[in-house]
Length: 566
Ligand code: GLC
Image 1 (cartoon, rainbow, N blue to C red):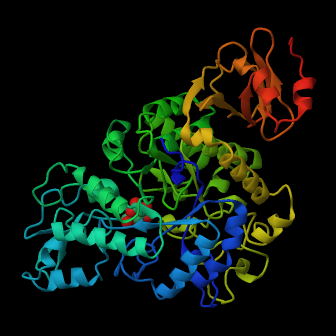
Image 2 (image 1 turned 90 degrees about the horizontal axis):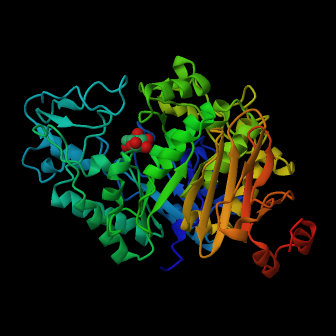
Image 3 (image 1 turned 90 degrees about the vertical axis):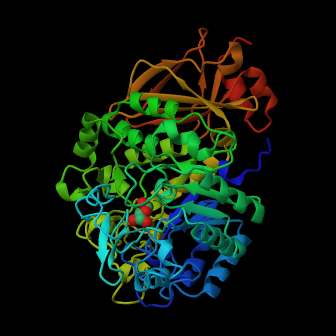
């Protein structure tokens, strides 16, 4: 198989233009500001930027309510600024993927305005209508507790319209061929302007059958094939990364058995079990989740993340598991959201404990898939729980100790910068961490670099090495006669462990530590004995003696210093 599928061994960084860097001093981040920060991102080593929605929008769902797909919201700049930004990325070898939000539009989109105004408008059938209130109107809300129904009456239209999300986000009738053609046109437009693909929003809802008579929505998977086919024709190396929080048994439907649907999907299943593992120091459900999501076409890839811009959805865990995560990471009611998740950022969830943050990041970087970092997590930014719903974890990037964290020169940032407490910008900011070799930022930079140097994770086949202690989690990847092995201690207490690399004969005798000097050499029975600190982790390259002698990039001392019978 060709091995230049860039998304298999990249590191994705997700940011929203509005909260990253404000260049014109109006209190809102913009493309000009982002352009100035490209060298920072390049230095961090990320390979791809995922831009959250930046198109014209009333901004009632942070841009996920789009009013014009072929534009840049004036607050963020112009299409010209976007192209300058895209060029800046290209110069630095950074790829861009953007959100593709086509399950719904804003109710301010001219398609919807036309549709509600005139029953005979060609746009009428671009949305989903019902003359009477459907019986299931109070079911299927994505934002329970905030959203009251999925069908709302529109006076002007004299009918009810369907909205899976908030009432200002009318669902597009995605079964309509004209709507489908428009989706392709939107993709084509942004591909032409230099993006390498899309993070497709709410995919299960995009492809579901919709309508007042639909009792149980059915996914129309063929649509996914059509999206991919178009994209591949326009630009061979463009990808779609699907947001689809589905059960493992449907994963293959999304990837396509012939690898002809989504290139990537976020691994929500592993995400939730990973948080359970971090909360309970029990790796067994995580191991199960990894096995359940193992089947995928060779060219497909998982997106591996810790926190994203939404709530940490724990809906797939058992009640006991969910309660454990709530207890440990979000015990107060105002830390929780939509009856299913936690809205906090990663650092405060982990009590700001550097050891736990490194453990979490080390896991994210070594589980099968491509890591997706949320902006600000590289400096361990916090949240502002006084902001409503998911906004608490969407505060501006903290660059320095200047007013408003150097994010804006305005006295009125559109969203307040966190300025108080241990996560306030006077303590947590890029400038300070840049100067400190031991900072979270510099650690992240090192781990990102190492992750890219270990393509086995993105490409290889994994094996979970059995250990009796559930707090210890060991994985090995094999790819092209190379192996790497990762050990994690999920617990707050140290561990002394013995394990075998699980390879025949000599092959697993030497474990070369990729992050520190303490390599491990197996005893006569092939057992490695190591002591792991609380929340400790190890990244090893695996090799027998032959392998070590052959490799010129490994210090000769490593081989001479070890006690090996040969
Ligand atoms: C996705 C996004 C979320 C947004 C919703 C509606 O779930 O991640 O932020 O509110 O879609 O577009």
